[in-house]
Amino acid sequence: MDIVGFLKSQFVFHLLICYIFIATGLIVNFIQLFTLLILPVNKNLYRKINCRLSYCISSQLVMLLEWWSGTDCTLYTDLQSLNKYGKESAIVILNHNFEIDFLCGWNFCEKFGMLGFLIHCEGTRFTEKKHEISMQVAEAKGLPKLKYHLLPRTKGFAITVQCLRNVVAAVYDSTLNFRNNENPTLLGILNGKKYHADLYVRRIPLEEVPEDEQECGIWLHKLYQEKDAFQEQYYKTGTFSGIPFVRPRSWCTLLNWLFWAILLMYPLFNLLVNMFISGSYLTLAIFASLIIVASVVVRWMIGMTEINKGSTYGNNDCK
Image 1 (cartoon, helix red, strand yellow):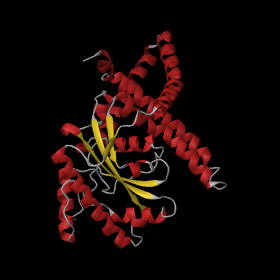
Image 2: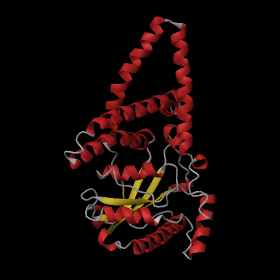
Image 3: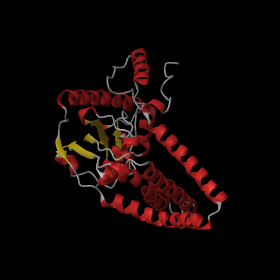
């Protein structure tokens, strides 16, 4: 292992990354409280400010994917759709099969300046148990069975479409997979492990999505049958249809992270220096205790992203 790879795997760096992420979130949330004063006066300005503030947090995770782990994300689409990405508002639908699929979805959205639209219609992440239950529901309701996805939750999607009918121009149907049967994890990303993601995106004009809730649900089920076919094709051929595009890494995510790292590391460094200069055993003991607690919390947070320890939502649908 090279020296850079060795350093990336050290837990002390994971603690620092989590410290910057959590501290940024707390500061941003505190600022967002004051933006509530703008809400009664100008809703659009309030939304724009909060969108920018949220970017400060979410883009840090995108930075980990792109710059820390160096994961490659190849986009498969057509030229006509590619020319529209980033120039319109859209609802992005992404399958939910992997621990870091939301990061790859954010990566796609961030590159096109639309890091704020993104839903998982399945409602929960894919597991064999949830898939078995979901297909029992499909059989009971007379719906076609899916091989690589759970049944989509139609009501939430239909309401989203109804509310955004005059706001967004299209639905971006996105299907994600990883090469060489890779099983990506957030812990692997923190350790600097590189993955190879393939993302197939097709643009569907919103006028093609039915307005009626029941018809919209039928349309969504048909969409997921097509997504299943795309996954089947990928497992057989190792690629998606469409033209592959690899966009350069975003400097914005790196600069955003560096800004917060410099801002937050300075007071932490001063605190550590003063602690060791004081030489107080009580102070050092408290600091050591905080490190232990932080380590447990960080491991717990990472564990929550693991598929085998994730949400049980979807396990009791038959009942």
